[in-house]
Amino acid sequence: MADKKDDIPNIPDNFDNVAGAMVSESTGGQTVLDAVYSGQLPIGDIELDCAVLDGGVRVLSERAVHRAFGSKRGGSHWKRMKENEGAANLPSFLSAKNYSKFISNDLEVALKEPVLYRSNAGATPAHGIKAELLPEICGVFLSARRAGELHYSQEHLAIQAEVLMEAFAKVGIIALVDEATGYQHDRSHDALRLLLSKYIAQGLQKWLKTFPDAFFAELDRLYGNDTSHGKRPQYYGRFINKYVYDPIENGYVKQELDKLNITDEGKRRARFHQWLNEEGRNMLIHQIGRVQGLMEMCQDIEHFKNAATKQRNVSIAPYLFDEMNKIID
Image (cartoon, rainbow, N blue to C red):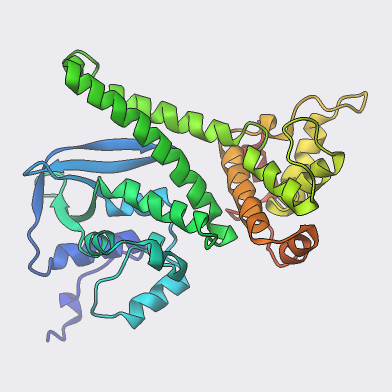
């Protein structure tokens, strides 16, 4: 073993660069495939690096999929990595224990053995996830939610998965019709990609039509009210202010929205979410999911209130007060 300091390579200190350096030093004997085509696929606000490899294998960059699902590789993930040292591990976005029963054997094997590929000549080898696995990954989050085993802090992942699955289905049938009729030769080269972006945006907007119907169905259940899409009690509005808007950035967002939203006559000009730009809407989607997930686990409104006191306020970045203006139009 070399003992000279100069023989030790300088490895950058962020996780993705360290991982890349480790892969470039040794591929463990795994074959590195070359990309025939490569590009980027927009999924909401994230662009996934993707490639078609020799033999027609379609892959998505594993790092990009981590970003798409908001994976932070936290302490619990590293603990599991250490416990399984020397063995293959699931990606951090599926490593939580409550997901395990919803991951099929085939999906587990595929995720533990990612494809190693180069996006272009001379590029550092990267890990790729076969593209057809993305709907299966989404299915894990949705299955966990249906079984009532999704933690409220994971609910936003199920929302994202639901939006993606609906968009994939729409684009898939369009692609099949185009192929059956030969229209794929006449459409623009990026037509399906643009359609996917459109359908994802529409899916997210559906979650922002005030609040999803399922949210109010849970409120009706907790309060013991008849389910109705008509006029709802005023105290539902107070519930939403207290448990959805107030926790975001310790109430600062709600405070600023109140300033924007009151006319001289004391009437509201618009619903709160109509003031938010894209970043603010994303925060709202996540908070709606957190609250709805918690409601689904509670028996009645008192049970919910007791559970909600244990939640922390929502803050997705260490904003300073003056920087918070970025999320308000």
